[in-house]
Length: 91
Image (tube, rainbow, N blue to C red; front, side):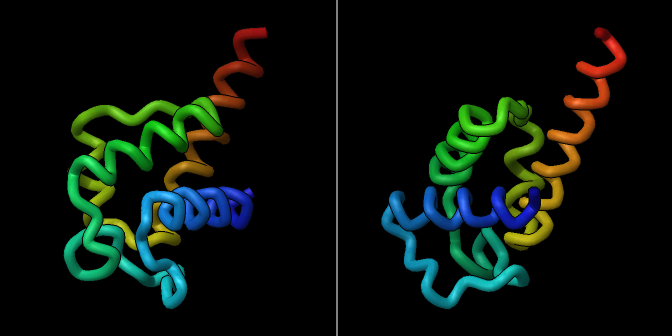
C-alpha cells in the first residue's frame, strides 16, 4: 500500500510542476528537499485526502514539511489502517 501511495504522491507532485526525477524516499518535502511551500503542502494533502479518504488537520501541515517522502507515505498508510480499523469496529 505504501508503494501505491508513494506513486500517487510523486504523480501529484509532478502535476504540480515539481521535478521529481531525483526524488528518493529520503527526500525532504520541505526546505531541505523539494521545498514545498505551505500552499503546495495543502494542495498535496487535499489530493491525498480525496484519493484515500484520510484527513489532515492544520497542525499536520507543519509536521508534513519536516517529513521525508517515505515518512509522509508511511503516515498516510497508518491513517488508512487506522480509519479501516475504526470502520471495521463500527460495523
